[in-house]
Image 1: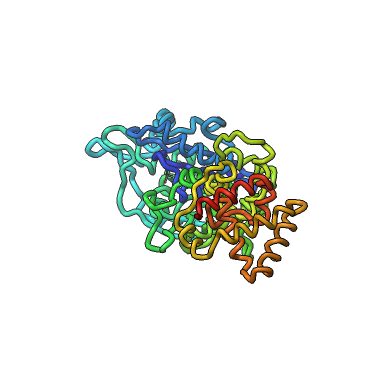
Image 2 (image 1 turned 30 degrees about the vertical axis):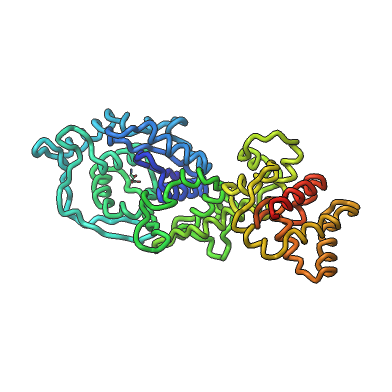
Length: 430
Ligand code: GLU
């Protein structure tokens, strides 16, 4: 029976590296139909554990990594907060005492190591041997237990079969193997996941680095599925060129032996690209639903909002851009971009606007096709590039130089609104 765990220390942050460790545990549990345990390693009582734990739980829920045992869910091996397991630690300390594996010195309790090489059977690193040369403290003189002890006691008591965690813990593993053996418990398999390096490759990504926290992406309106997909690829790949993959497919293929030995490099551009692809691939229904949660309350027809959003999906890279991308659709007094205005003024924009206004006056259907046709005709008639019309009219209608497809946006605005905006722009450009 496979039982894995994610065992974060609540620091107040949910680091990308922690999320990836959680994800690999979750993927493996789901791949083999095992159990995914969430255990909070909150022995550091100084911190505000409750809020700090919430940050992690929120992030886990946002990324849709559900746990089978742990906070809020319960399970046969609880409690799942180390701060509530003192009695259990006392019992396990007695086991070591009876076996004469511990002694006291200066008020602290030391564990007696065997000084034999210990095998760390690692599914990523292979078979690693390390020898602990020195006895180590498992209870401090102030009576608090040390990480190595509680970590192993819980892995024993929770019957963890695979310890999947960051490579920074590889150096602790010989201590842990000594403890497992001292308890007479089976030693789990290990999988130490390589580090995540900063985008520029200059060392390990730390919580101080830009974009290192899950909450950053949530705040920036990334789609959680996109971030999760990206994290899957930080140290694992499906052995072909696929990058965008439904999570069910990753679960089907994921195995610990396929995790890369080399450090993974965090690539923020690739992540942004992945988010854009997920935005593009949303169903229209999902896109509209999400989009509406991000627009300020405006007094307009719901159908108008839907039509505006519908033409944005193909160009939008991130929901963080949405409000800026569409604001002028809902505001007749939108501001004109100063720089674009200066630039446009060199090209006689009033003439282009007047020509266009005259052409739409007798236009039948105010449709994409018809609008495209008149711009082509105007360009031919006056010997001017279609681009000049497009830039000028777009500026007149939105005050900007970029936005949704030019020909799609006019039918959405409607003939009347377009006419009014063109006239307002003429005054502005005088
Ligand atoms: N609390 C430890 C950490 O956050 C867990 C180590 C482990 O997974 O064994 O690094």
